Length: 113
Length: 116
Image (cartoon, rainbow over all chains, first blue to last red; front, side, top):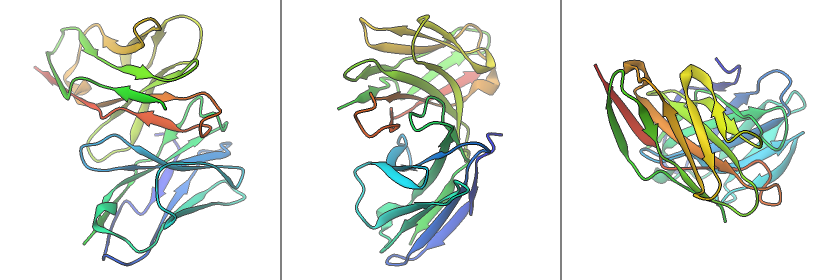
């Protein structure tokens, strides 16, 4: 086990709704990254937070947003859900923002219907 | 822009035989290279990384990888495969820090099937 926990493990939402996914980082880690893994593909970088500030973002629209809290846990929020948002969402934590070693959670499987 | 290619969608190997999973990369500057493994309905498990130093990197579960700068490759190897090694393997590269800090660029993945 990596010590990175994500909740919920599975989620079903309707198109147009909003969703919040949560991630608890490994103890001592101050960097968290979020990735989207569509079926049959590799993970795609959404964004990264370092000490509560976003310091990197991939090619995702603004309706994907996030937060990192003082205890370094994190949330991923997605507004106006679309069918193509159905994917496994992975959170990774690291002890440094350079991600010399990132540890992943088990993921949240989001299904949009 | 950085990129990673895993040319094989699937690798089939008999138990006890050597296993190789190929990865090539493209990035400006010196890369950080990683291998992760994913079992069904699970997150990614870290196997090994190359940052600097010896080109042969040893990792978890008997895996190793060889960094080849001239061929821009970072192939994953295991001398004797086990049935339990059957999983999805991802190669990833992290670009120099001027590009989105710790962003990992993943390949599409290679499914490894080890038969008894």
